[in-house]
Amino acid sequence: MKIKVNNLQDTEKIGKIISRCLEKGTVLCLDGDLGAGKTAITQFIAKEFGVKEYITSPTFNIIKEYEGRLPFYHMDVYRIESEDDMYDLGYDEYIYSEGVTVIEWSENIRTILPDERIDIKIDRIDDNKRIMTIEGKGVVYEKITEELKKYENTCN
Image (cartoon, rainbow, N blue to C red; front, side, top):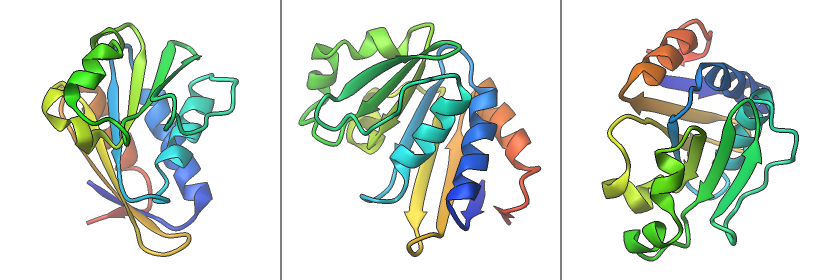
């Protein structure tokens, strides 16, 4: 599924729709170039999810934990040098937890990601416009795509 995003308000709407579909154990993978909007959509998802803290990119921390309606884990694996580093950080404990995990730069750890996940690739068109390509597998993915089909900027 491809969605055209014209501005930050569109990103917020999409983030809210995604957030309402999340369940415990959901893994959401975000990929795209620097400045594509990975952290922005994470902020909107987290806010709708009940996270009160302001979300920032955990590039130097790698993993940040928040409380929402379920535990909310935000990872930025841009600086990860190997998948073994992820296991040293307790990767399994987050991915297979009762919470929701959002991973920025997930392409860096693709081979250790669970099969059931939601992948969102964000392509920057210009300062405001983006194309989000959403793929995945599992019940949560199906719920998200069903809800997003109602969104008017879905590309065919």
